[in-house]
Length: 204
Image (cartoon, rainbow, N blue to C red):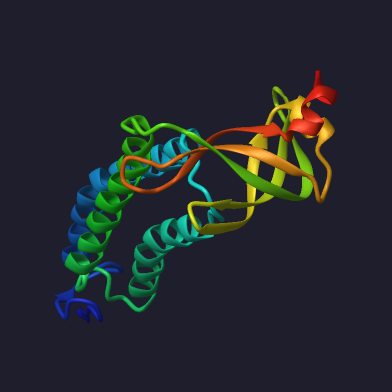
């Protein structure tokens, strides 16, 4: 007895619709390249972000990346669950290509904003709200949570990577000197955090 495929409407014998099986294989094959590009874009975004760390909370970057990765994935899973994946394959494929392209552009934006920045750096005052460290394979990494005032803007609760000397002499409520670069595309980023003048002698 022939069955009617709920996804494509074709009649078939056996347990699986051969038309949908073939379409699914072709669909997965076409997604292979966008997935590779998206993965490279994600790695590049993380690398560029931490190499030329923009001022301010990274929450917006995390939200954008999560949406770019999560929306196509959730859509594909939902369509597959309701046997509509091959019917809307073009939609999912377009979403994946868009996500991959956006991640590559985001990585390029962060990297070029820092690497092409020829503007002179300036010292901005930052106020420490807390300090913490993270243990890693090659030893601990040191961080200060700092609120920075620069160029009429206020960047609150930014977790900045610092050296051990700056970390050891800085406490909550202390001020630090943040080396700020304006950015080639007007996205300010920092390259170093130094103790305040009164604390610098202690770190030596």
